[in-house]
Amino acid sequence: MDIKIIEVGPRDGLQNEKKVIATADKYKFIKMLSEAGLTTIEVASFVRTDKIPQMKDARELCQQLFTDSSLKNLSLPCLVPNLKGLEKASEAGVKEISVFTATSESFNQKNINSSIDESLEKIGKVIDVAKASSIKVRGYISTVFGCPYDGETSVAVLLKIMDRLFNQGVYEIALGDTIGIGNPAQTKSILKAVKNSFDLGKVAMHFHDTRGMALANALTSLEMGINIFDSSAGGLGGCPYAKGATGNVATEDLVYMFEAMGLNTGVDLDKLVAASKFMEQQIGRELSSKVYKVLSRGEK
Ligand code: MG
Image (cartoon, rainbow, N blue to C red; front, side, top):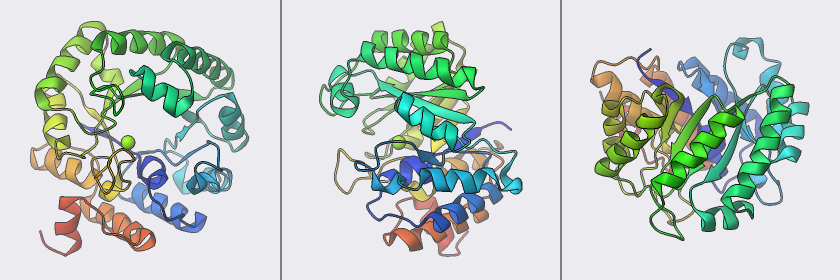
């Protein structure tokens, strides 16, 4: 495989969709995504359900997924904000979690009520407990390309956080353009700095297409040596910082671009479109992905 796609639609996507989806439909969606060839699918988050009702069924969904033998070779990570979340994830049989922080102090304060240092302290404890239970941990860093409150963020701070997370034991870090504000020149300069200190084989890019820059940034990342990308089927999920705007880059858009360039993603576009179409019917609004729109109309 030339490119590894991490499908985040069922978690990151649905978490930003208003309509709460039935557990059976989430389950079917994840099955369809796996049939399309996606081998890592972020399926849920163990967060406060009074804040995020979409994730109220995380435990039930995970229990169903983890007892399905047809899914046993997949990675099905769940997002975990703290020790309490880890405990719940662990009880549901989760084998892999994602933890998160941001390069912006204001963003962390508003999002998780912690400074960057405090968040790293908390994450360190989560990772220690996870490792003791043989649960793999992936790290997310938000606001790498800019923050909705602070504007520009620092690459030096990013490198410090990455160093800390790798030392704490995460196996991979996804760098997030949370508000979809990055551009190719910025992508290049950030990745140049990252490459000087870390193995790019352990770094993923998590782009948002809010301003239509996601593919340009993904291509630049590829040229810089990145081959792991997070994306969401159909472009599922909006952007909480810009009403009505696009959120995660669509899996269809990434897969189309890479495959058209002769790279192998392992993903069957037609089957992926079928999965997105199924979820589009459930959420009751049109998905944003351009490639999805073309293919779902039956055009080639
Ligand atoms: Mg996202």
